[in-house]
Image (cartoon, rainbow, N blue to C red; front, top):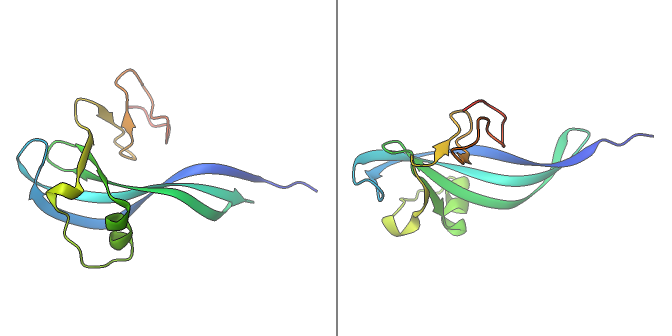
Length: 120
């Protein structure tokens, strides 16, 4: 009997969009929120998710921000919430590269995204 299982990383767009003044560049733009997680799959069906982290990306300068878990969980539950400047912790910006497919923060020396494999 053969069992097929594995561990992988996934990303989910939470469908949250808010306009604000960017903490990094000071321009008016919007941020979209997404979640990154690790999962265990069995016969290609994801069974368990853990290690959820929440991030936002600005539209003006493509800066990636970390969001506190409690705020991210509220967004995931579709609760009415407004991101504040103190909720956004700067992680990376356009000085670093972002994958155009999945938004993953990639070092400039990479030619391909280590998460989704797309050419940068």
